[in-house]
Structures are given as structure tokens and as C-alpha cells.
Image (cartoon, rainbow, N blue to C red; front, side):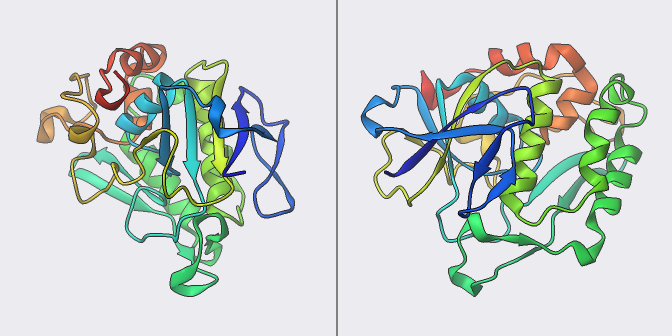
Length: 251
């Protein structure tokens, strides 16, 4: 079977088997037949604090498939994100190790916790957003993520998606991890649509509406930052913002 079925819930009680062993994850998995995939399904790469356009696809698609059996590509949103600071865009990157060199699958990418990246990322997030309208409201939800070590990149990203689902008050989203590489996907293939070196949203939507950003007066409005920029600035209204974005491949 090419996909492993799961459901995205507002809880971290569930376990999933990503590499053949149990790890903490907010998803519940079971095998299913690809013929039952819905027409508005999307195949996405995994993402660390994903961009707004990625999250818009995730909440609007009827079914989400996360590619983890690909050969891991470097310098993508799989292990990095962009946040806004007083000086402009600040990229944050999770240090990773490819256990099988250039042939390592995304599912097997490990995190180099010797780099103390958690402290650096959290300090950067606090500095960037501590004066945003809703940062204090969500701080206690996200800070624990940066107080522990994760072995796998997929495990870290799954935990972050779990936190985002709670923050956005998302009840249930159908989500799948691939168990084999999808050469001919049964759904909309967006695996290469999100890249830090490009403007990802232009291949997904015609526009991302402006919202108030903390440092907009310094450097103007910056579209498609990490979802936490939208969340910390718009709070409960972030979900409606994401729902209103017209996702071109899904219409």
C-alpha cells in the first residue's frame, strides 16, 4: 500500500509507526486503499513551522498526504521556516543529519541536537513576537516543543502540527504519511511547491491577503511567512484567514 491513513486530532495521545517503532505523534494510522482518496486530496512535503500557504492547503484539502519516503532534499521548508523581525525576514533552520548520506529518506532524517538549536529558535521567536497581540496567549502551547529533544525531523514536525491544530481550533483533518514513494500520485502533487528560494504562494494562490504584522512599519508587509506569524498577529481569526485563501490546485 502506498499510503498510511491517519487523522489529525487535537491531542497528542496517539502513536504512529514511522520507522517500524512507536514514537509520539498526534496521528492515528491505518492502511487504506488509494482508490478511496477524495478528489480534493493534496500531496505535501513535511514542513517545520510551515508557511501560511502550506497551512491553507492543509486545512482546505479534504485529505492530506505527507511525503516522507522521498530522498531528502536540502534547503527546503522541510527543516526551516521564515519569521519576521525588526530587521526583516529571519530564516530558522533545524540542523539535521542524513544517516544514509545522499540516499537518506525524509522519514530517516535525524536532528542534530548537539547544536542547541532549540534555544536559538525559541529566543528568536520570543524576540520577534513578544509584542505581537497574541504571542502570550499561545506561548505556553509552543514553548514546550523547544524544551525537549526530538530524534526525527518528521517527529518534530508532527508535534508542531499538533500544536498548530490546537491553536487554530481544528477538530479533525484527514492526514496520511506515505509508506512508499509516490511516482504517480493519486492526488494534487504539491511536494515541490514550497521552497524558501522561491515565492511559494504564487504557485498555490493568486494572492495572500494582507494582515497586520508587528514590524510592517519597518520593512513593509511580507507575505507567506511561517504560520506562527499569522497566528501571533491574528489569533483566533487566523483560521478564517486560512479558510478564505483561494487555493488554485484545489478549486
